[in-house]
Amino acid sequence: MAIEVAGRLSAQELAACVEPRLLTEIPGPNARRAIDADHEVTSPSLPRAYPFVPSRGAGAMVEDVDGNVFLDFNAGIAVCSTGHAHPKVVKAISRQAEQLLHYSASDFYLPIYAETCRRLDQIAPMSGPTRSFLTNSGTEAVEAAIKLARNHTGRQYLVSFLGSFHGRSYGSVSLTASKATYHEGFGPLLPGVLHAPYGDPAGMGYFQDVLFKRLVKPHEVAAVVVEPILGEGGYVVPPKDWLVALRELCTEHGILFVADEVQSGMGRTGKMWAVEHFGVQPDILLAGKGIASGMPLGAMIARADLMTWGMGAHGSTYGGNPVSCAAALASIDLIEGELAGNAERIGGFLLEGLGIVAAECSLITEVRGLGLMIGVEFESDVVADAVEIACFEQGLLTLRAGDGAIRIAPPLVISRDQAATGLRLFGDACRRVAEKGPNA
Image: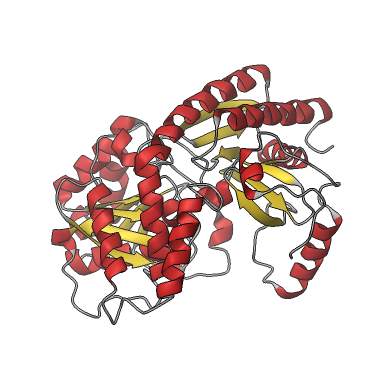
C-alpha cells in the first residue's frame, strides 16, 4: 500500500536515523486497513508476530504504511543482512534485471549461477573443494541435503536435535523439533528421522547409550543435521567441545556432518559461518536468509567428493535465479569487506549492554549469543511476548524465539548509535513489563 506522508524522509535520511519516529498510534489507520484487507484473502497459517505493516526500509530503519519509522532489531528474521535496500545490492539487482530476469539453471547454463557457486566455494568453511546446489530458500537447501546424504551414503537414517528448526516443507519439518505445532496434523512425517538433545552436557552419551544402542546402528545413519547455534529454537549457543565431539563422532562412523547455517551464516555471528567459532568443518553446509539480502536464495554447499548423484537426480526451476544470484554476489562482497567485522563489534557492544539490562531486570534469566545473533531469555513465554509488544509500541522491532526468548538480530549495517538506541528502548520495554505486569 503506497501512501504519501507529509515530511517523508529521503532514503538517505531514513538510513541515517538513530531514533524511531512515531507519528500515529501503533498500529495506525493505514496499517489497520491493510491488516483487515490481508485477513480476507491470505492463509490463516501465517504466524504474524504483531500488527506491523512495512512500506519501505533503508539500512536498519523501516517505515510503515502510516509513515512511522521503526528501528529494526530482527532484520526480517535475520534475512536483510546488508540492511534494507543497500545501494550496492539494489544496483546489482537492477543491472541484472535489465539483462535477464530468469532462465532455469536446471536445464541451461547460467554464468551468474556458476559464478555464485564459485564464490560460495571460496568462502565455504571446508578445506577442500566444494560444489553447490542453489535453491529458492533455506528449507529447500535442507531438502537437497537430505536427498544428497541418503543418495551418497546409501543409508536411510537422519539425526537432528530437540529445539532445532530446519524449515516447514515435509523433509525439513521432519527434522524440525522446536515446536509440536509444526508437526500437528501433518503426520506421518518423513520416516527414518531421530532426535537427540541439543548441546547435551553429557556430550555424545545420548548417541552411544540411546540412539546407537537402542534405536539404530551408526552404520545406518546417513547424516547428522545440526544448527551450530539454534535459531528459531531460542538463539542457543552450545558448548564448544560439544560440536567438536559431534564432528568426531560423525567422522568415526562415516556419518555426514550437515551444518544448517541458514540463520547463523553470512556474517551474522561476526564470522562468515558460525562453525568457524567452533573450529569444525562440516561435510555439507546449508545457507539461506541473509545470503542475498532479502532476495529468495538458498544454497547447499557440499564437499566436491560427495556430489556423486547423477544428472537429473535433483533440480529446481527457480533456484539460482539470476537476479537473486546478483544480489548474493553483492551481499558476499559487503559482508566480507566490512559487515562481518561490524557484526562482531556491535554484537559485543549489545551483549555487554544487554547484560547490564539483565542485571537490572529480574524478568531476564540469560543473555547469550555471538555477534549479532543474540538471545535474551525471559522467565516465561508470556513475559517475552509482553516485552516484544512493548518494544513494538516504542518503535523497536524484535522477534520471539524458543520457549521464552527474544532474538536480537539487526541488519549487519547497524551503527553503534542505533544499537545504543535499541538498548535503551529494550530496557524501557523490560521495565514497563516488570512494573505493569505481562498482561497489562
